[in-house]
Length: 119
Image (cartoon, rainbow, N blue to C red; front, side, top):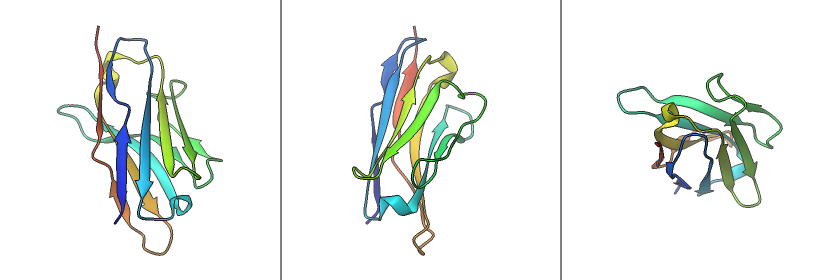
């Protein structure tokens, strides 16, 4: 079955960096557009990064533009999110999301990884 497993979260000081990973299985990774979302306590889940099938196109909201970088390795079935210049307001659970374009049309979520930015 489809699985998305995130890792790499943790506690970091303001201005620090983290690299999140999401390993996918159970589907053909190159047929999925991948996204990272986050959800802070008491807030709605929001998208923070998008990457196309080959990685040629990426998109970010203004809140993280220039600080976060999404990438993917289709050979390793993995999508990454590099978080730099972290701020207190980046504290959230970060989720990996896959939308399949292989005919099944499924959308899948990982279990999330906690990122806490604190001094």
